[in-house]
Image (cartoon, rainbow, N blue to C red; front, top):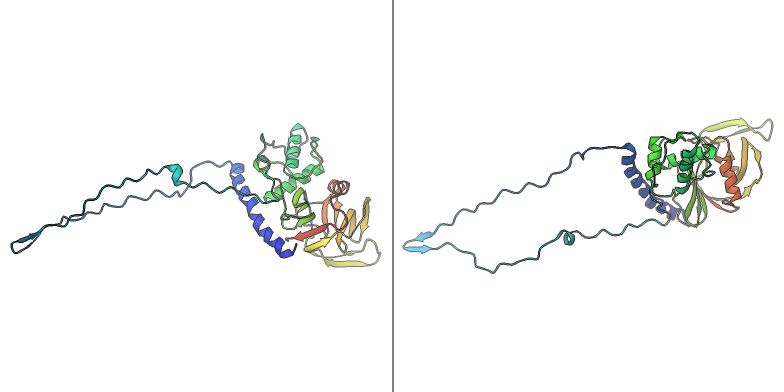
Length: 314
């Protein structure tokens, strides 16, 4: 698939989540009241009065006023409301969108607390496609990262805590999260929203919080070559790439710091585990995910060698 065709798909797909978010915002804000500026019905037009026609006298001759020919009345069939309103065409859903519906109960406002209520949050996040370690009731790293990813996806403040607004959106949002990709097996990195999508067969399986290059210049000591200095700009390169090498076990000393179980796709740029995945771009150019998320990617073989990596946005 060419880049051009992907861009076309992107333009086509972005509008649907935005419309759903706009509707959910009314629920989250709990707004009440009437609709301002509602147009009233058109006022009836003033009746048109035709002056009476008087006879015209010419000498002794009187011309009578013209009269309309008499015709039989035409009776039309009554128009009913059902006949006047055409049925709406069926709504079509893009192939990469899965509708799961609103949650059956209000998602609890737990903040960052552990407990039974947190199990509900974890289950709902999984249902909406935001990976975490499962409903164990512990508000740990994977749960916080999943909440942050959900907030980024909907454009909410990415605090990682389930406040009232986040809980309302989590209750009422009715789709699994998805990227722009609608075909193939791809790791999609959206730098604009700072999210990573794992796509299989055109369907987004999971959405992860990520942190990409911060765009700033750097000049730092090379961790692997004492005395040398690494310089450059912290960019995660846009484009279509492929996984070309990997390191399966543990932590590795990269030129600019430690990285966990990396999957390289462009020179020294990799998707890798990290202990710091904030809600903003912070890396030297790599694509950071949490350590538990990177273990999950390896265990489920979600990013094997030669997997396509699509990086876009910024």
